[in-house]
Length: 342
Image (cartoon, rainbow, N blue to C red; front, side):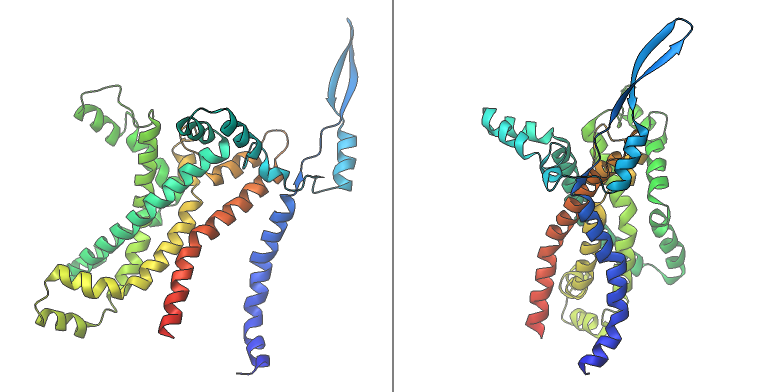
């Protein structure tokens, strides 16, 4: 294939990537360099039957003129990334200088909003992702071994958690663990503690969110592994049986190596999805116990008076960097494996 033919073949993909990936990311990076304009206040007088009282209000005309002159806001450079709402470099320096031991440093840093969200995001990502892969694989193997007449209904019910939208699914589980819900009432009965509440404890709230994440995402891994199981060479399985391999040994030495590329694919997808956890925090009303980087973006954009676009953009860029760091080991491993086979 000549270079001209190659470019003619690939330019539609390059154009789509530029329009829908590169330009939005560049615009977010540009916005992260700006912060909102400082409000211009004006003093007015409100007069009534009993006299006039001075009032201070935002000069809307002056603010409108400033926004027209600089729509992106006031240039702030990289300071948004280092302020107290993000990397908090000054605060961490002060914490390290004034703390007496490592435990105090850790606790004080974990109370900073960005790091508090980051630790939950990483915990959710590194706990839910492997569990999704394991449970998805187990479900796929079990479904693949049941009689054909039962596979249709079993596959349908196995996919239900993935079919339900994340917000609705989290609300359903939220109501179930409520003290008046099925799970909450059963746990109170089981432990003979009427005051027991899964939502009152931050630790139990985290556990509930992890359980929801596995419940919601395991069907995706199941579908991928189940499709892969249909392509496992029957000759290889039969040869292993002839050699005396039992069921577990067939899975361990034949099926699992064969499905390893699919496991890598599922891991990549889950790492990206889980690092952007957002809907379950809203559905479970868990923001008091668990916040994520995506939730910080949401709160910045929900500021009552002026949405903090610059802060939300900076958090978005840090989230992108986090996803890239998570994916790099997997991508390097794939590249090394590809080069080895080439």
